[in-house]
Amino acid sequence: MATWVLSECGLRSLPPVFPRPTRPISCQKPSKFRFLSINKGVADLNLQPRGFTCYNFRERKWESGVSAPLKVATTEGEEEEGINGANGVVEEVPEFDPSAPPPFKLADIRASIPKHCWVKDPWKSMSYVVRDVIVVFGLAVAAAYLNNWVVWPLYWAAQGTMFWALFVLGHDCGHGSFSNNPKLNSVAGHLLHSSILVPYHGWRISHRTHHQNHGHVENDESWHPLPEKIFKSLDNVTRILRFTLPFPLLAYPIYLWSRSPGKTGSHFNPDSDLFVPSERKDVITSTVCWTAMAALLVGLGFVMGPVQLLKLYGIPYVIFVMWLDLVTYLHHHGHEDKLPWYRGEEWSYLRGGLTTIDRDYGWINNIHHDIGTHVIHHLFPQIPHYHLIEATEAAKPVLGLYYREPKKSSPLPIYLIGELLRSMKKDHFVSNTGDIVYYQTDPTLSSSSTSQ
Image (spheres, rainbow, N blue to C red):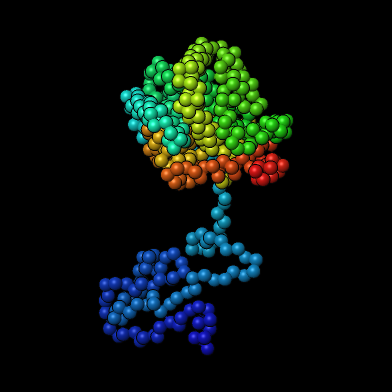
């Protein structure tokens, strides 16, 4: 009867009891009792027998005679929970809240990053410029020489990506991570950005504002969320242009001229709200350089013809703009978990920076200078791009769950189009009030986007 009861409970009967020998025989190996359904066995606990001498029964494996069910069915309505320690206390693991104030400070992250990651090497930075410029001219010469419609689409994709790489190097100049020499940064930044029709100082200053206010609903500068009242004030054309592909991927030139909805000013106008009076000279200098490049392109159009100029420069420029809008948007939107935006006292530089997102771009990572390692870049923009990966790895133990590992990309990051589409369908506006807010969805806009 007892054997039947034990078998129904999932237990095998105990081994037979042997009579205790009259003469003790010392053994060198203790018996190893182990309970199969818990983390540690008796032997693991280093329990020593007390009050009796160990006997050797031909090294019988006592653990094979006892077993317990690996899982016991719960009663109806019960939830299976983790067990904390040996006292059997049920403990529910709390869900991570990305809006909670982090248990570390900016100084803790800084201290975790190796000292050499902060060192700027102007020769190394210039080597990347030389590499990219050689590739740009090489692609243009090859495409013009071959001049067939099998080559042109490949050229447009490659050259547009290289224009984007030039932008990232100029972006490093704007942050001062290119070198410790402000004059070198300014000269290199103007040459790189003017060549792709970006006003260097005008953009540099607005981008500085973006970093200083990242994650803030109202004060952030680029791709910040729209409060509900501004969203509802948009006319239908503006809504379509902002939330329906491919139009958001062509927004950058418009942003340079008129900024984002709800903001006024221009990157070309020294009297814009973007700038303070002391920056007026810098803005004028960049606008003059931009104008000179535009005039050069017009002259090239007369020399080689507008169609050839469109093929060699115009279409790659459009691809570059699409790269820029895609990358800058997805570094702050589109994560599978809802991430917070802040206002008022809840915002801080650290909490805002922790809402940024790293992205993997496959083969493109090296081409566009690891700009996908964006969290550490946003917190410490003075770190050169060639140290960002190492700095990120070093900071991960401090960041913990506040760092979100990027999805692994195939050689070409096609998956990012899906990430962009999902975000465009659901990330439309945030509440007009509240210091911690999340994106909300406009049902009408979402259904119209889905039907397209």
